[in-house]
Length: 472
Image (cartoon, rainbow, N blue to C red):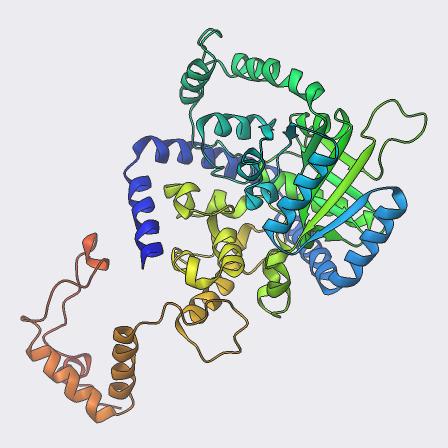
């Protein structure tokens, strides 16, 4: 119940924030228009989405074998592979690498898995400084906030917000709300850190089993700096990010960039297959790949919910979701917000902890219509809603039945008893029509913003008979 109260409180705060709603609406309108412009041919888009879904489904169908192949190829290439079942284990591995190199600073590229690990807080508690180099992530680090979107983490902030933040944190820098000036200021602050850090960290968009290649997609160049300037590079990713062949990457990349930001291609596409080789002038001397499970294996075991793991983290479902675009990412209280987060996060953390998220949806289907790899998000939301209430399935979902209440169960049992008998049903309807004026108007939270329905004084059958129609 506390989780529900916290979620409702965050939602109410977001809905009451006019600036937040205006910022989100403006940003999402632009992202939706850019995506639409990138896919002018509906038939070509459908074919590409089908291809993307097939590639991701193929990789998931072979996931154990592909992960073994990825480890073998990476090891042959000189990349050190680490496995972590939990975030605690993953954080411990990163800490060990930092200590082995006596590193006191970690420079980070954009990585949602590191957010999932809460890596910054963990390392800072052990005396290690973590610095975000992605501009949006860096802004939020200064503000002490988590990302609100997986592609544009600071999408909820205006340039005036950012200018005031920079002035507060760096009083020696003249105030400016010009975007180019703000970006230049951040670049000047961060550039020195790249050279000072002994270890850099990045995420992984695609891990290719065939060649042991780690693919990183970015626009700012900070990811390339994190992976080439420090002598040690750590790449962290979930186990589901593997694809079978290098030839499978181009269709997914085309879908990812155009679905996320409406770009034909991002500014940088990095392919890392090994540490620096003899004779090469740049690149890290060590590369580590950390593969995180954290509940993904449990999701993988379910033949329906495994479709959640197809996600390529484009954020298109958030950009088009009528819920997300009104409350933003922070209201969800999870690493991954929006529609995909509402199915992924409860499966990882448990329905007893995050069971409210699958309910926070209109089930309009916009997310499924734009998902580049055709994840049936509404169907999976309904599945998790079912799991949350019912307790008669196979127990595959953690927190099964956690949302079931004695009162609600009794109401539905009474409803079932009433509707199993035509005679009981007609008697109840006749009674309801006669008592319609004294029935309560309040129907809980539903009637806070809606006019409550009134039971008609006459049933449909009565009105039909009055019009000369016989009961059938």
